Image (cartoon, rainbow, N blue to C red; front, side, top):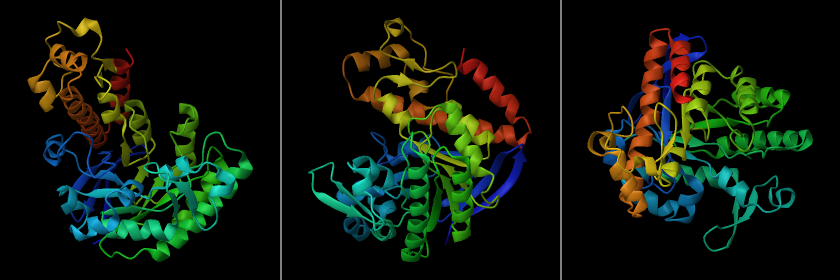
Length: 368
């Protein structure tokens, strides 16, 4: 079946709802860990379930190159291949492809995108139709339209041409999409320009997708601009479909996104910073290589994750100083659980009509 979204409660623009999928029903707003290559780095599916993960994200471009969509299909689809029985979302590969396209004016064409493989330099060509074919074979619960992620800054003329092309690609991809058990999300672009965001949102909704994403944020713009991008698009998205803000995982940005009506988020941030000894806490981000933690025999935070229940800052610091990989694993568990627990707290606050109060209290602690 296609996914279904049920809006249960509003607190201002913040939304509490449920996402119904082939692999279970889950509450929103939610944070989705990123498993680019069919694994969330360093973690097992069992560890993801232990932190209450729901939807996770994998990457079409990377799986296309290794091991290949046909291999995944022969394994029975992405769920069986990676042994994850929760919902999976696959992005279109667009963001990776556009970062690899050297000459944007030459390599991004109406038909698709020419680029070089990051693995062996081989010339490759990705189109909306090929992206849909790959995602259909991966058999994720949610597939994403193939779009162009507009860089920041970009001229109005470039952003307009790119936004219009993304809409044409969305239509082509939808026509090429053939998997009755898979849902397809459209992506709103438009860069920093209010009228282009409105145009993109309205026209994407007309195409009729199962959910809608706000793309082209967190690409180098300042926070004020990012929040404006969300505001400019989200007001035109249907209230009965899930809304997904792509590539955002900073705690403050999650709060601001939920306040504006976003239901789903993803980001590599919690695992990426974990590998560099950084941990989220309710009192801000800390780096466990810092000498002040050498004799700190307390947990990272007031947290219910496996790491905080069993290990101290002193031990974790020792692991990083000694270059032991376990440190990155344990911090990844904590950081993902921190963001997912944040979402649990936000959902409860929305249910009790106190979201803005929760947001204010969280920021007072987090910002010191």
